[in-house]
Image (cartoon, rainbow, N blue to C red; front, side):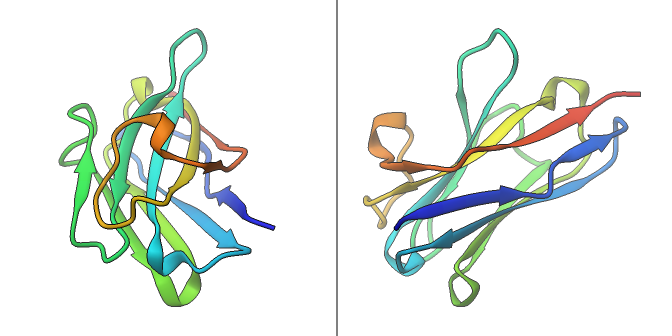
Length: 125
């Protein structure tokens, strides 16, 4: 069955880095766009970044642009989110999701059909 499993979260200090991984199974990643979303306590889930199937199109939320980089390795069925210069406001549960609209970078949650369980990222001194 389709599964997305996130890993790489943890507790870091402000200014440090983390790399999140989204491992896909049960389907071929090549044809799908993948998005990263996050949800902080008491806040709505927000889109952080996404990457189209060919990696020709990417998107970053304004709050992370210049600090986060999304990439994919279709041979490994994995998408990565490199997060640098982390700030306390980046603290959230980060989830990846699959979109069948692979040729572009969907912005709306309803355009994603499968979601992972999430990984906790905590940025605190």
